[in-house]
Length: 496
Ligand code: F6P
Image 1: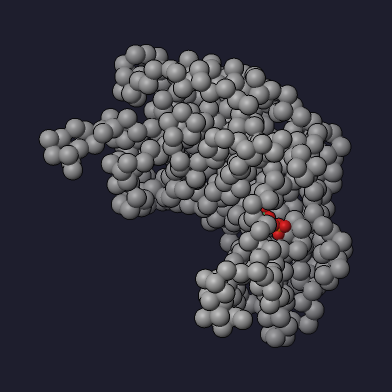
Image 2 (image 1 turned 120 degrees about the vertical axis):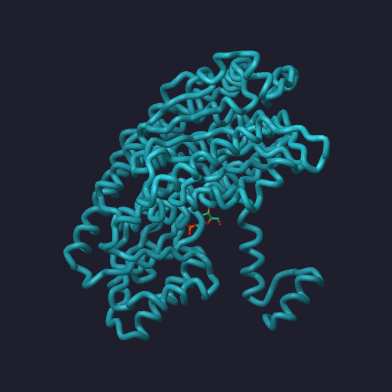
């Protein structure tokens, strides 16, 4: 069990005091990796806390566990699996890297065939999947796909038929490629949505709807059984977790819509971050330092949430992507050996897009009673072509908000007073291209890993999602031992 007492006992200096204490603070608490500048100077981390966290990491055998993950050992102990998403970007056990490369080359061959019209005309890509089988590809296509206009891509996750019908309204069934993404190929929402897309194609005269389906899955037999021709089943390894799977064939819609070169760049950027994480000492290791700040706030200062804000429209889906990555990974109540963890685990991740969020939720960040470590993400190179004032305002707002949170402003009127000493970190990207985005996402993955190791939990299972699914299934089958409130709701909605 991790011993946090040393860190808890450190004097609690304010951020302004920390800057005054050490003129070299910025240099010590910032880092440049893979085109991303990381600045933790406006957090309460100090060299002393970093050293103490490094000692804790040593006592938790972070280095050994990291090596075990990259080495393809079984680190997801509750499910008896290795954790090998890094092999998808070429970093990991040689056999696993070879398997990933073979599956990528199969994906590339299918993409080439689609581009050569082997499946007939494809203008629309309708990707159905949920959770990790949707959030990652959606983020990629939304962040990087603005210039690439060859395909319209829709990613539909929700079982609410409105989500599909919105797409049916704008897609031509005869020019639609259905991509069914599901690691297990059993997820209710995805299978129901996939069947409804096939029915829609059929109703609109598509002769062989199954001939226009691509399946992305770690259960290829199930996809074949469901009716997808084996040549269009793109498998990936069971050891790639759903929320870590965008690097695998789950990234297919991005690889098709953005082009193969972009997909490769994405993988290379992630691999660069993998090497940084694997080889750098902890005091200059971006994922480790970010995790130390996370842990400082959750374990020592009682922060219950954390909030990333993307000051770049292209990263608007990042907060929801991070919600699954962080909360499904580290929202756990027991340690790896099944004991109650006895401390808070993952912070609740929420966030939004700047500058919009400033006019909606920042009131609470500046004056509310909750401590919320904020994370600003911004990109130096603008994407838009409007007058420079837009980008200038965007970035200056991000930076000024961080300064205001830290500095505060006393006033005689308590309602107008800002306490300050509210922490934030900043990730400043040189540009947002596939390579940098790959590095950024890999940074978050490894940060989650370090958090998990120091908390002594398994970041790679997700049993918490099962009970609700089981009960919904029981209700669907007319069963389920429901309480009076739930039974009444089912009856009122006419579902009994
Ligand atoms: O219910 C949660 C979950 O299992 C996630 O972990 C996963 O990303 C998602 O559902 C989708 O699962 P699948 O890819 O197997 O359809």
